[in-house]
Image (cartoon, rainbow, N blue to C red; front, side, top):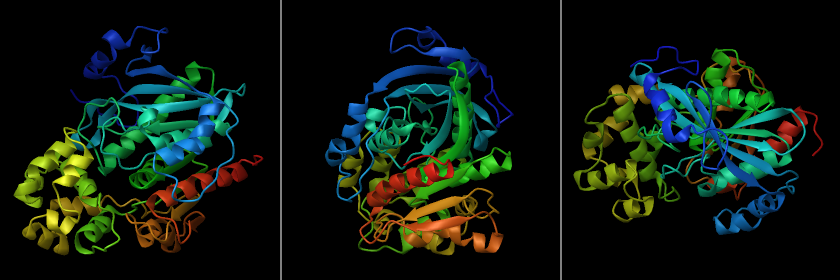
Length: 416
């Protein structure tokens, strides 16, 4: 069955069936979904107290491996109510086939009924439930909850297709599916908030790493359908997938992150599935690594198991003939990657792009493309924000979270 209107929350019998049954029992127990209408339901995930939020910005940073970069945050002021939203969407690459996706809404426990909104697009994860609507599995999500809803913002965070409760394969760096999931999550969040008597105010976008690219391609979609965005800010954004992949394959540096082969595995399998590029992974990955690669993509093994059995550099992971095709950039796969850039338009929205000088995954020149290009397009104001000489990939994220709140507060004339 097809759904042919990709800019709406749509009604599809397959999707409605998935929303029914045990997940539509109405208000009640914590494991119950509240059904609002065709293709839309939500459930409570509980509340983060102010005390828990304070631990997130202090003790949990250390425990989760985010303490290397020195960055402080203001003490959270408000408890936050958490909700998982299950909503209907479509897969644009497959003739708008219906699907279900999930995401998180985090609402500060305050009296105000109109709240400024931050839509957060998360970074690369290898686990299906290492996603925003499972916040206990995602430190980056918990930090965003503490920093934004903990200070009065409403947070919306899509899981993407293939993450959270989605049963689709991972849609990693697949452009149209990514921005469709983000768009439909935003529309779903508005309906959920309206049912709670909450009006969404000015919209802000943020995202880190893969999520930085997601944020930019989402921003392009929002501007194309004339949805107003007050400001956007990215951290370590892979603004152009094609040169990013070429850099991984052809431009290895000793400081490169060891997890890049895992990221590229997700990219290859995602494009093979969503774009129907049959045989892509077999043509790209050396035979001795193909089993582990497929298992990682399908979530059958952990990243640690994958890493133990594969090279730490992409060049040693791929077939020589595929390396040659990467150098030439020829073929349908490479053409799709070229069209996946997320910065070459006359942007209407103010943008801050945060980069780190020692980022092991996203070089500064990739992160700054979204700013530099506007010298040609003459779009809205933009700034490349330097997180400093000690900012690696995680450090850039930590710096950006603090910077983004300060900037958004300033735009809204809020007290710090």
